Length: 397
Image 1 (spheres, one colour):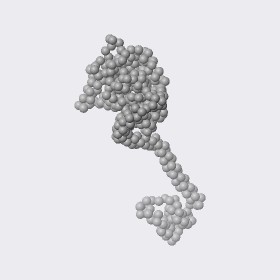
Image 2 (cartoon, helix red, strand yellow):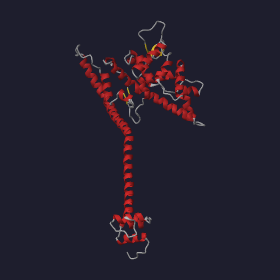
Image 3 (tube, helix red, strand yellow):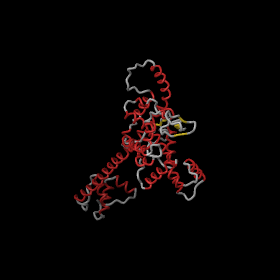
Image 4 (spheres, helix red, strand yellow):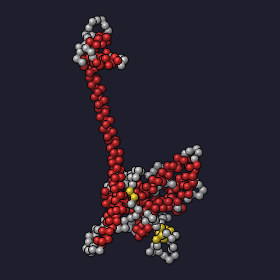
């Protein structure tokens, strides 16, 4: 060192120049001002002895310790962030994986279903003539076997749904005609629930989308022509002649899954009635027109028929419209609205009390519905959601 009277920081910089310390050169070029402590640490890392006026060894050790502590804290923080991210993202990854798997199976099933159906039905016809009388009672016909096989491949089970898993968007057009051949009553009921629940949830979702749009329109100071046309169509759909917005809010709402499933089970004999199998009529709605099925037992003065539908979805849609528009269910709609206003869950068990007009038996019918809901734990499905079925992630058979 040429001049010991130089300021201490300049002595340190001279040492850096003398020993050609690259770190100091880089800092010098970037025009960053280093503190005495930082320069000392750089020199010490390069094993250069400091001038006599330097911090004592204890001070340097303290500085090194602080630097190490900061480094360790940063590493720990990064690890914690990573772990929290994995925990947070894991459910999402599980959902996405499930959806991808469902989409893959759905595409495969859609492409091969028609081919397999014609092939297996021909095989079944040829084998049916040679069947023996002592054949197992557990035999399930083709339609039901295919349905059960599909649900198994898709890992579509009610236990998972009760625990919060989304319902698979599998939409059957018709009920298996041999559903009653499932020997286990519990399994038969579960199969029926798996068939009707996606249809109910999907139609409810459409209503919720409309309801969301309605409130968005009502929140605006003025509406576009398209919005006005949309409103007029909704008034017509919900049979409101005076264009009463309050009444539209009452009518445009969901039917809880537990109640819809219970009524479908009651009216269709858990999917085994003649009306359900021949006309996709799951809710026993009456008609006085030609497009209906004649009840085998009815009084001479009764002229009604059971309304039939081209597919199960049409039956579900008509049922929802019936409860949301018919004057006999006005109390039902008002109670549902009160539940919403009080931020309470729209429960099938609560709303069943207001469906005494659905059948001639009145209050007895209500008791039966509530019994079905309780015995089969159907309220578990009032909070169920449908797996995202956009971009073709659905299966219609």
